[in-house]
Length: 304
Length: 233
Image (cartoon, rainbow over all chains, first blue to last red; front, side, top):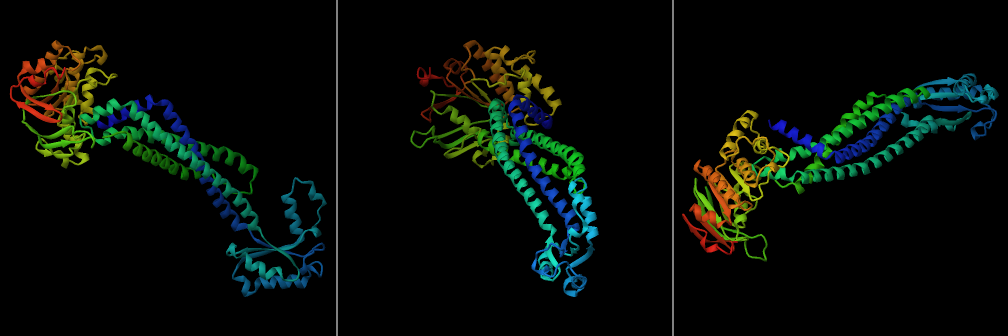
C-alpha cells in the first residue's frame, strides 16, 4: 500500500514538473555521455597497448649506402659486422631482455614497404637497396628499451636503434589528452546536473508543500515524505544515464564497429560489449549523484 | 493526556516569551477551550504539543511522555496520536472528499481494505455521508471544515487539537461544527480548541483556559469567555 502510494506520488511529481525533469534528464544524459566517452577512450588505450605492445619491437637498422651515422663510416654493413651484431643478440648479457628476434633482409623490407604503401605511387620508385636491413627484436619487458639501445647503437654497422613504442606513445598521449578534455567537460556538466537536480527538487517540494504539510501533521514518516522527491531525481538521472549508455553503444556499434574498424583493419578497437562494462557505472553514478543532491536539498527545504 | 510543567517558550531573545511559565493539565476525555487574544500563546501551545517547536524551559508531556525525550524519528508516531484542525481547512484541492480523508491513512501505510471501510464511516460521523466524490471547492466552508475534521480523526487519535476551527464560519455553521467536535469528544477523544468565539464558549460551558501575554490568567471548569471579551473581537 505504502509502495503504491509512493509510486503514485512520484508519478504525479514527474508529470507536474515535466519541463524541469526533462532538463535534468538531458543534462545528466550529456554529462554522463562525456564521462562514458572518457572511460571508453581509456579502454581503447588499454586495448591498443595490449594489442601493440605484443607486436611492437625494437628495430635495429643496419647501415646502407646513404647512411651518415658515425657507426656507418665503413659504408654498408659488412657480413662480419652483421654476424657480430647477431652474436651480440645471442650473448647472455642481452638474451635476458630479448624474447625473440628476426632478421629482415632488404628484400623483406621492400616486400613490407610495398604492402604498407600499396596505394601510393611511391612504391614504384623504391628499390630494395634503398631500404635498410634490420633485426626486429621483441623484448621481454618493452620498458627495457634503453638497455638495448645502449648496447647496439654504438656497434659498427648499426645505423640507428628505433623503439617503435615511442610512435604509439604519441598516439596514446593524444588519446589521453582527449579523455582528459572529456572528463573536464563531464565535470562541469555534472556540476550543472547537481545544481539542476537541487533546483528541481526544491521546486517540486515547494509545489507540493500542502501535501507534505498534511503528511507531517498526520504522522507520515520521514521516508514516506522524502522518498518520492528523492526517487523523482534519481529516476530522471537514471533515464539520462540509460540514454548516455545507449548513445555510447551506438557510437561503439556504428562508428567504431562499422566504420573505424573497417577503415583501419590493423588496429584493435573496443567493441560495443565494452559499453556493458561502462553502462552500469554510469547508471550508478547518475543515481548516486541525484540521490545525494536531492537528499541535501530536502534537508534544507523540507522540514519533517 | 497533556501536561505543561512550568513551560516557557522564547522565539526571540529581545521580545517577551510566547509562553511564560505555563503549567496546566488536560485529562483524558476533556473538552477544553483555549481562549485569549491573538499573540497570547494559543498557537505556540499547539506547536509545542505537536513537537513542531521545543520548549525553551520546562517540560511538555503528551500521553505521559516528555516530548523533549522523543527522538526525531519517533516524532511521526507522536503526531499519529494527535489530530489537528485549522481555521483555513488545509484540504488538498485536487482530491475528492474521500481522497482527502484517505490521504491521511495512505501516508501512514494503512491497507486499502481498511481505508475503504473506515473513510465512509468517518464521513458519516462528521455528517458528510454521500459527499465522498465531491471536490473541496464544491463544498461550503462548514462542509470543508467537516472534511478537515474527518481527516484529523480518521486515524483515531487520542487528542484533537483545533486551532480556531470556526474562525472562517458563520455562527449557525459554527454550531454544526461544534456538534461534530462534541460527538468526537463523547467518543473519548480529548479535544483542545483554541478560539476567539465568545458565543460558542459561553453556550457550551466547558472548561476554559485563558491565556494572556503567554500566561495562564484563568482556568475554570464550565467557564465563560468573560474577561477576554471585547479584546478578542
